[in-house]
Image 1 (cartoon, rainbow, N blue to C red):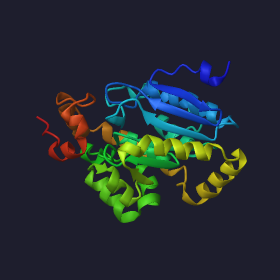
Image 2 (cartoon, one colour):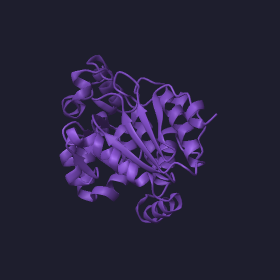
Image 3 (tube, rainbow, N blue to C red):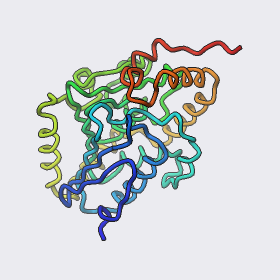
Image 4 (cartoon, one colour):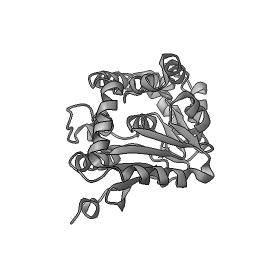
Length: 284
């Protein structure tokens, strides 16, 4: 039995479009948060891809038209994810992102809907990011939680958009639509939504037909000049979890959950704007 037939993920689906082109579709209602079960699925998938000499391209998309990956699951016990095997020895989410960025297969994020926080970090770790001009939303809102991004967004963004725009994105904590994200270099390009699926399919299919070794060599040469050093990522993860334990973070978190965080609500759909209206409550 092949891996595609044997793989039984719970929060994503894997489709073999061809032997050289796979599609991974996130499906964790209501808003595709990133928790231990999804991380377990991703780690198993990454292990296969790290040892696969046939797959040339992997496209990541979402079954939810409003949410690509909302953010990290702020209700989940982080120790469950940390107990999962870590090939790199890094914290759970960092392990996934570092391994994702170094796959031999070309990875493409097809962003239709919201990719914030850890969702944004995921797409930043893929090789190519295509965004629906009308429907994609990206952002790093951690500053509004009184935290720093834990999955290396600062390092990856700096290589893509430059120092000033990285500060703008990280310090503002606001949402970026597909058009502005493309203008900044946050994504490769914004494609009109009516043409989005056809464009991504055509590009992915074209690249999937090239020689596997050539694609591997090209990725290695580009990675040599563009990937941040691995050691920067655990420090950022440690800083996030240190912030998450503070009362200021917990106060904001509690307020947002009361207003519908991690549900398909106004607060989740407009989190970039809402973070600027939510502040820690004084300790009694």
